[in-house]
Image 1 (cartoon, rainbow, N blue to C red):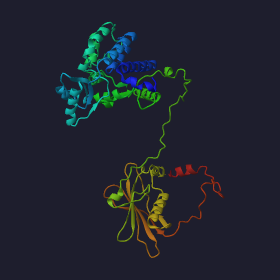
Image 2: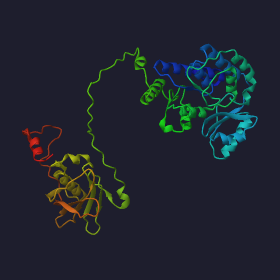
Image 3: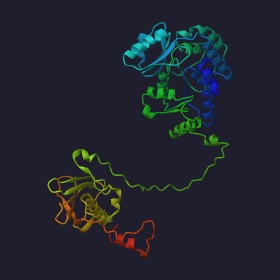
Image 4: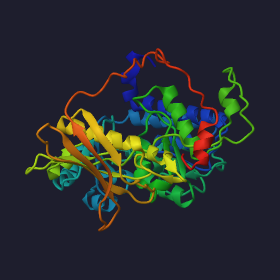
Length: 467
């Protein structure tokens, strides 16, 4: 079909034949990849395709049935209407009349009504008034409605001239929602006039143990309806093979990948035949699983909502300036896993907050109060960290003295009503940081650097209990 032929597909005589061809072609394609279904089902004309691939009809007879169906429907007077209604079947049924009937039950609250335009729109108006969504379908005729009756006798004569075999693959019926025992001419006549019980068919398949549903058609409309009809959708995989808004090869391979990931066997050699692809040998030993990513600490909430300032620091979460003295308190929580790299600094097998960590806390505190130099910093007690429990940390900066210097104290305590322990004290003073020893990191090793022999250093540190 070219671009100029698009309007022809709006005519049901061509649309039905096109749907049959696409659906059968997709079935044969998946079949060539080693995928054979346990059951097949269709929706309206799709059931003719399902019956053909199940062995009920020969290709010639299926073509005759599809051609007659489309031709006779196309020959009916144009008119009528079809409207999708978001309501259960039992609520819609009391509003039906001689001129309108249920054309499809697509889900627990998804019904299509079809028939004379005035009667159909009257039903739609009732449910729109109740707040239910309604949508008029773009169709040339009112399918599966009383308006189909003038074609039934001629269609019966065509259907009676065909041969029907027992299905080689079980077929779930549109008419009953159950597995079909036997097909006949009368079955296909009723199939034109009566409702498509798609939702019942999906539930039957689910009851039969089906957990993978693959939609073979030009889009994924049925996949969405099937998902809504399942009693346990979280236990099933519903895969549309083609999507109208995606390139066909991408959609097809995506669907195949999803089916395979859910446990479906695929004949990969058949899939890649002629492509030049070849198997690649993998290592015969098991992959070694080792985790190298740094764990990201839990996100801190918006501390500004409780009157604090953000500390903008990986070790500290909040800061507050004391109103009476101009001092500053910075707070945070630390553990051997938050940040995760703290667990790497160990003494005797126990994670201990490193001395450079106190330097980092002092620098951050100095930045808060405009003191760029650490005049003194004395460690008072080790801060032991565990993975099971975090400790609360406070960095307390005193008010400025006459020279602008400030005292610094680092406290910590565990969970519960425990006393604070002072782990470090120091003095911060104004002024720029000492950068006399700075060097250009773009040059490595730095100019004038002398190598230091480190053989055995880490082993000796480990022997002393320092990790």
